[in-house]
Each structure stands twice: as structure tokens, then as C-alpha cells.
Amino acid sequence: MLECVVTRWNSVLIMIKSVCDNIDDVRALAASGNVSKNLARGLVDVSESLLADIANVLAFFDAATKLLSDDHKPTLHLVVATLYKLKSELASLPTDSVVIKQFKEHLRTHLSKYATATD
Image (cartoon, rainbow, N blue to C red):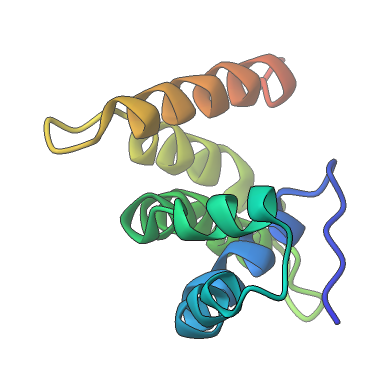
């Protein structure tokens, strides 16, 4: 069983990927009548495309974390370049939905707030 921890974005990514991978089972559960009406409505209303878009945005952070967490080679020199890449990946695209644009803006703001390079 997977556990979601609010403060860990990678936990959210794992949970979203799991829902995407098991969406047919989630929909079947909602249709089974074995869950409350509120839960069933929530399960039916899940937007697969939105979940996939959110997972794609969070995947940039997953790649950055893996790159910077290597125990077998130095990574300090990669920090600034990785921050720059993350910020550029969080730029809104014309094809982004309103929700994804807002999500990227939120992440970009927090990234700038918590990950600043100083002398």
C-alpha cells in the first residue's frame, strides 16, 4: 500500500502515477456501488488527462532529485544548472490548461523562494 505524505512532492507523484496506472480499477470501484456516493462521484470525476499533466510536471522534479542525489559522483556543480532547467520547464506553454498554468506558476514561485543561489 502506498502512503501519501503532504510535504513530499515525490509521494504525490507516486500516488498520481498509481491512479493513472489503475484508472480502470478505480472506475470499476466507483461503478460497483460498494463505496459511498460522495466517493463514487469523486472517483468518476477524476480527470485522467489532468492527472497525467500533473505527473509530467512533477517528473521534472523527480529527474532533478535523482540527478542531484547520486552517492557515487559529485553533483554540487549541477545544482545551478538543474535549478535553471527546472525554472525553464515550469514556464507555461500555450497548450497548458489553466490548472496546469497555475500549478506551474505556484511551483515556480516556491522554487524561486526556497532555491536561490547567492554568493
